[in-house]
Image 1 (cartoon, helix red, strand yellow):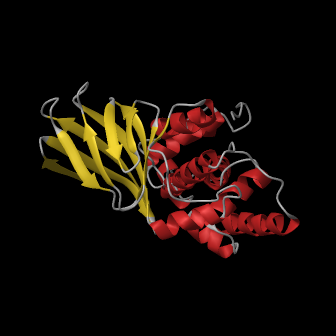
Image 2: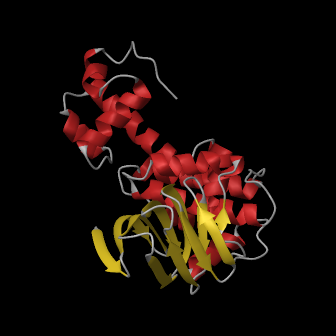
Length: 289
């Protein structure tokens, strides 16, 4: 869904990428008619924006900051703001918005987070966030809601961790948490064809969403989205090798929403397109990480 609005000479084009209970991810493009234009407003939600194009000056309750590609812009819910474009005529960003209640739940699951309101407007492009920002830019068109949900949680947790003086890292999970993740793995195996979400998996595991995501990766070595996709691929590969069903039927039967996504994902992981895999007898491929 895409919507455009214009105010004070600045046109805003917002495309919703994905949304869930308490969060949403959007691709936003701002275009100014002239270098004198100012965009003024108020943050409706807790906002974390990954700047992907253009530079601009951002002003709010804690002063001003220059935002450049690779930086994260931070905004508290309810804070007024102004963006000016003296040196460029716009910018583009991937915007992560959270309700205050949702963001507070993430903060409670972040061990180092002592406060949840932002006292700075910017996190510059630093090594601790470089990998995450690059992943956000590469995945600006999410093909699966669970992947967008994962990224929204990771960005929120990483920002809270950094602002509280630590670096994002994993902790040794407790035996109870390991058992809960084992239950989640069984659930994914049983329902991998369904559009599962982090929220549902975390709820079934009696864990908060961010805590579940962090512990799952520590225990399993991959994110829930990666495990879900690879489970779907494994079952699809078995069907390709053992049945005569069409590739499209196999793709949809194993949880993929469209054929092109299935073909591209299968080729990236197995090194062969599904048709080539089937013709090759599934024995001479080299799996890729």
